[in-house]
Amino acid sequence: MSKEIKKGALGLEQDSPAERFFNGLIAENPTLVLMIGMCPTLAVTSSAMNGLGMGLATTFVLALSNAVISALRKIIPATVRIPSFIVVIASFVTLVQLLMQAYVPSLNKALGVYIPLIVVNCIIFGRAEAYASKHGIVPSFFDGVGMGIGFTCAITVIGLFRELIGAGTAFNIQILGSDTIFTGAVGRYLSRYQPISIFVQQAGAFFVLAFLIAAMNKMKSNVSKKETK
Amino acid sequence: MRETIMEFLVLILSASLINNVVLSQFLGLCPFLGVSKRIDTALGMGGACIFVMTLSSLVCSTIYWFVLKPFDLGYLQTIVFILVVAMLVQFVEMILKKYMVSLYKALGVYLPLITTNCAVLGVALNNVTNNYTIEGSTVCGFSTAAGFTIAIVILAGLREKMEYNDIPESFKGMPLVLLTSGLMAIAFTGFSALK
Figure 1: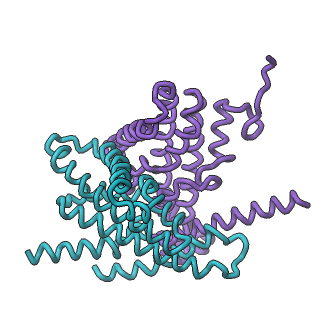
Figure 2: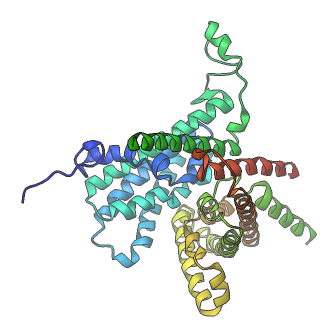
């Protein structure tokens, strides 16, 4: 039997680590393309730092739970797979929670209840069900890493955007507004900015995401128009 | 006695309106955005939520105060609570199917969907973090779910009204719903003056 290499995302070999990584990051980005895991996307993106922390915590859980579920996929009977997946995921979430309490208590406090709620993040459960329960350990692990990094990038960018417009800061560094770190002509120009505080409040999360999805829709319809021409 | 009633009233107001579960805590967004197309389905989802969240708050905090706390197992709360919620939903479904057929038919497909509603787990965890007693947790669970119902029914009503509006092509669907929710969130921040 001649071995034909199946092409996956970006023309890389299907199920190879690199293909899985870029698939999660770009082709099937969980937040921007698949639109799953919306609760943390809206809740923790009031600043870029929170988004980054949440994203990395989710990546950790996602990669390890994918690997473990994939290792156990032949042992777990199909009828009890959902409770078993939940237990594996919840164990890793508890691990992350304890680690964060010990080493980054301030971030843990800022993220609060959303850390234990990683358990019910549909991205993790969705990947366990759709990918890890059917594939080997290595591709499953990299699938988790790719999806996690894709999620991290998306929510960090949303967080950065909201923080910059709403408070004039980026990663807690004052860029816009009267206390800007820039000096000279640029600083004078930037200091005229008035932060629009609604963007760091709850309503801002809805607005930013609405415009982001609208922009994606616009891009998609432009692409399909070009294809029909 | 009067003080406890006052305390509960404050708890009900703050859990249902001031800290509205969807619009200010962003829990339970998936059903909020997904099942809010029509008022009657929104009411069904809200009803199922009230039922399950009240019960799960009661059970989770009972387990916390009688098992986890005395044996110093607080770090297991996430694992225990998610299993309790998942089992409870299945159990409630079975019981309703057997003994309360009319209620089961009314709640129907919404019951299994609730396991994925992060508000259920969120409330159970919040109850523990805030050190609410068992009665307090139950009241908090009920009023949080009531707040969820209020929000989802209002959104469904608005969506029904806007169904045939002429809006830009790229804003159709999810973006419009998100913008509407954003405006609702602004309206609900008005309740914070009640504090």
